Every structure is written in structure tokens, then in C-alpha cells.
Amino acid sequence: YLNSEATPKGPFVPTKEDYQKVYDEIATKLANETDYDDGSYGPVLVRLAWHASGTYDKETGTGGSNGATMRFAPRHARDFLEPIKAKFPWITYSDLWTLAGAAAIQELGGPTIPWRPGREDKDVAACTPDGRLPDASKDQRHIRDVFGRMGFDDREMVALCGAHALGRAHTDRSGFEGPWDFSPTVFTNEFFRLLVEEKWNQRKWNGPTQFTDKTTSTLMMLPTDIALVKDRSFKQHVERYAKDSDAFFKEFSDAFVKLLELGVPFQSKPEDRFVFKTSE
Ligand code: ZEM
Image (cartoon, rainbow, N blue to C red; front, side, top):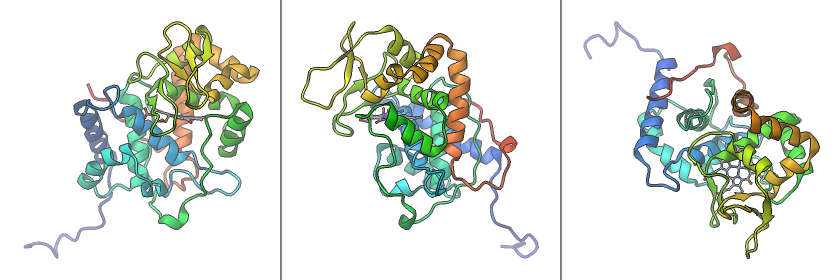
């Protein structure tokens, strides 16, 4: 064009406003596409961000969201985000997936999740071995092994598991079935309240061991969820979060921000994190 030599363009460097546009696009798509599960793709976006990040190993520094190596595994959430990646091709998958998890938490009524970019996509060789994510049929020792490997303490482990206020289990995915509470598309401390206040019986069915609430027999808990009230140290935090929603929101946010950043070699500082505006 006319002035192309006079106005050389450097590489596109996205600003906070550009990332807010990606956020807004995710929020709009979440609001428009309500014909999925309980009416929102939000929970499955949160799960994608968690799975992408939860492979981190602090000893070897491997795994974590940097790399987006999970893009080689098909997922509902991935398909939901593909058109957004097409519209904003400059964002890496690993940044997009974590941003989408943060956006989903905020859009579903949860706490603010400050977020910063800086993840790169790597090829399949960077994939971590299978088996780094937790197994729901296990107990508190397993929870401590897996989340300890990522560098979390008991308090953070319990806070993070509070994400099970959102979404449900699907027999065709994990073998487990049902939602954890009565409002699976709203981020609340209900998961903890139900763990403390409800009586949980083992469900009689052909599927894997899971628990159901005595009052309605419509909700479920995984064995790892029940482990949170069997273990004395975990239980203290469950009881605290059941009583104090503000403490849960604050401590969940801190732990989720940490989760999404595990193993990422940021150029930016923690104080440079973006706080995205939630949709009206
Ligand atoms: Zn989950 N999770 N998770 N989790 N999870 C499921 C669903 C969801 C465990 C687990 O095995 C399962 C964290 C911790 C742990 C979410 C977020 C987070 C399901 C059901 C299982 C089996 C999957 C299905 O069938 O669709 C175990 C064992 C965990 C630790 C001990 C943490 C930490 C999370 C985020 C911070 C979410 C949002 C869902 C719901 C997904 C959906 O599709 O609705």
C-alpha cells in the first residue's frame, strides 16, 4: 500500500484491551449457547483450564498449562473455544484455555480471577505422561500426593476442590453421574455446605463407587470429595468454607490463579496481572 515503507509494522503485541475482547467473546458465547448440560459450557471450561494446568510437577518443572499439550485430546470445551481461537489467532491455546477458565469462574458468579498471558504452545513431545491428574476413586493420601506434587498445601487443595460446585459428572466420560449441588451453573460454597450438612450414602448402582444425598438422592459426591470430610485437616477448611463464603471466594481465587500459572516462565510480574471486567 501507499505508505507501507513509511509505517513499518512490528509484530502485533496484544494489550490488556485485546485480552478483554477475548474475554468478552467467551462471555457472549457462554450467554448465547445455553443448550448444553445444565445450561452452560462454563463448568467444562473450568475443567479444561484445570486439566491443562494440573499436570505440573514441581520437582522436574514439567507439565502445567504452558504448552497446551491437551489440545491433542478432544474435548467439548476445546470445540467451544475453537471459533474464538479463529477470531483471535494471535492468542496461544494455552493462554486461551486458562483465560476461558478464569472467564467462566467470573461469569458464573465466582470471584475475580486475575490473569496474565505468556504461555506458549508446544508440540506433542512436550506432553506429560498420563496419570498426573487425580483419580476420583482414591482417598486423601492420593489427593495430597497429586496436589502436593503441584506445590499446594491442604488449605489450597480443599479450596480448589470447591470448583465441584460447578457442573456434573457424565457416565460416558468418567463413569460417575450427576451434579454436586442444586445450582451447577452458579459458583457458590454449596459444595462445602452439602458436604457438612447432608448425609451421604453410597449409591446402589452398577457404576463406580459414588455417594448420594439422603434427602433427595439426586446429588453426588466422588470418593475424593468425601475424603475432604474424612480427613481432619481437610475437614477444618471444609467447615470454614461452608460457613464463610467470602473466605472461600478469596482463597479459591488465590489458589486458582496459582494453578493456572504453574510452570509458566512469565516475562511479566504478578502485579501486572489483568483483572477482566465481568459482563453485565
Ligand atoms: Zn474435577 N472432576 N476433580 N476438579 N471437575 C469432574 C468434573 C469437574 C476430580 C475428578 O475426578 C472429577 C478439580 C479436582 C478434581 C471440575 C473442576 C475441578 C469429574 C466428572 C470428575 C470424575 C467428569 C465428567 O464425568 O464429566 C478429582 C478426583 C479432583 C481432585 C481430587 C479441581 C481442582 C477443579 C477446578 C479447580 C469441574 C468444573 C467439573 C465439572 C465438569 C463438567 O463437565 O460439568
